[in-house]
Length: 257
Image (cartoon, rainbow, N blue to C red; front, top):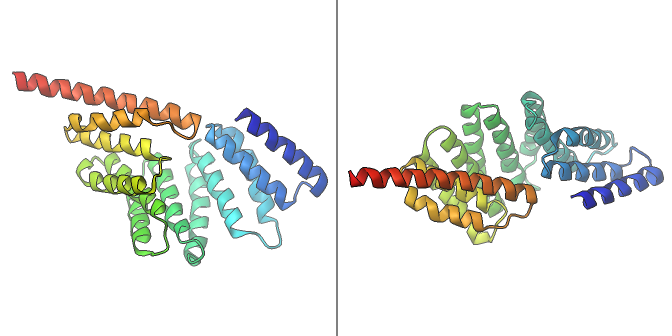
C-alpha cells in the first residue's frame, strides 16, 4: 500500500504541474488515491481526497456521469464509516436517481447502488429501510437480463445479511446459499470468505453448529485479495468458530444428560 501511495502522489504532482490542478486526470488520480486509502480503512484521510476528486469532476463542462457516480459512492463509503450517515445517504440517493433514469448502459449499477445504500442503512441501524433496499436490489438484478451474475450474487448476499440482522436466519439461508452458488460458479473468491461466515452464523443461530464448522474452516483457509480483508475475515471466522464449538459442546452435554 505504501509503495502504491507513493506512486499515486508522484503521478498527482506531475499531472498538477503539467495539466493544472483542476484537470480531469487530476480528479481521476485523486479518486484512485481515495480508493486506496479506503482499502486500508483510512476513512478520515480518504474523505478530503475524494471530496476534491468529486469537485473536479463536477466542475467539468461535460461531467462524466460514471466517474462522478464512482467518486460519490466512494465518498459515501468514507462518510458512513465515520458515522456521517445523512451525507452519505444524500450522495447515494443522487447516484441512484441518475442510474435509475438511465439504467441501460450499465444495468448492474442500479443494484450495486441499492446494495451500497443498504450498507449505509445497516450501519445506521435502520433495518426496515435496509431490507427494502436489499429486496429491490435482488428484484432488479433478477428481472434485468443484462445484469451480471456477480451483481445478482451481491444483492442476494446483502439481503441475507439484512435478514440475519433482523433475527431471521431461516429466511436468510436461501439468499446466502444462492449467493454462494453464484459466486462459486463464477470462481469469485473476493467475497467468498465473508459469505461463508454469514452462512455459518445463520446455521449457528438455527442450532446447527456441526454444519457451520466446515464452512468456517474453509473461510479460514482462504487467502483474501487484500491484507485488511484477510485480517477481518480471520477475526470474524475465528469468532464464529468459537461460537459454533461452544454451541456444539452444549448440544453434546445436553444429549449426555
